[in-house]
Length: 493
Image (cartoon, rainbow, N blue to C red):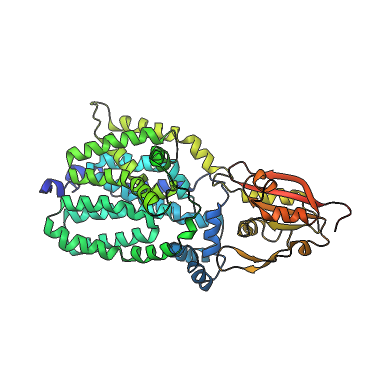
């Protein structure tokens, strides 16, 4: 066990530290990160974001409660937040703003955590690297809870460092609260806790660890345990995930950074930072290193032994560690008489430039991989009175209604809302289309997925009802959205 005053007070503010670290630095880092995340995006809501809208905005509180008993129960804390937030608006940017604010909170606390671990020279570049990561822009402009998970991971690590400075009752309670917050964001955010647990074991006296940290962590994990049980009962919601092999770990730098160009070099820099931290203070090196590598490794173990679960967005919780360790590595560079800013700025700029292609991609209209406005625009450009619309997957109508409002063809199959994200529909499609000369069919997937084979049964049913394909459009991304216009064959119907 590593103990000692030097370890516990590694982040205490000296006179020089206070001079070099204005109190507004974390706030400025947070504001800049929030602005970067929310700025410039024209991306349509994704299918998952539409699910957030459906769960938390489009239905009353009683409807939300009914939904989470069927699916997404572990997202209930986030859905409740967005439900209240939506009282003031339903626009894209408004639904995404909480995530942008969460990204800003992560950056602010990350800046101060970097200062605590390795001084102001580490805190500023750590926050700057985090702000320019394409993954931060993506999840910071995404109406899902992943930015909250990253923020909670940073806050809990920051709270743990304060406990190591002085394990008072109030600080331990704040740490327990931060662990509880972590568990309420996303189930797999808990994968950062083993690194914190090991760091606490190494830095704190054994008695303090056993009698105060272990109980505090256990209490903090109560919400997580409840939500995990709910999630296990609803694990059919992730049945679409395919198993992965160890080779997926090679893609982790890309997944954490959100860029295949910026990720690998930043990961290499972060490894250097972890080594530097280990040499300076083993507990905090273990924290940073474990935070960086354990989430993807443990998620892969779950994927192999429990249920397929490895999805790139689930490891975003490790992105702050990538930036933190990178900031520590930069802080160790001392090239007198070159000012530190001239050392730090080019590296941050290089990471930003390498991430520009991904940043631009995420900000396009189909940057979240579902171009609902484009699909609605295709229909409106060629729509005629009397047209009908049929949804290949019934849940798609939520996104089309969000962007099309009242300007869409008649939804001839709709009976009403279903118990979850699906809708109740008529099963007599031919009768529902009686007298209709044209029908629009929309589905998630490529043109080939719907026009060949039997992956989209509604297409086959429309053809059997006497219609033939007139034209089809597919959005640029995969699987994307397809809009197809069918017209009745003369002499039929």
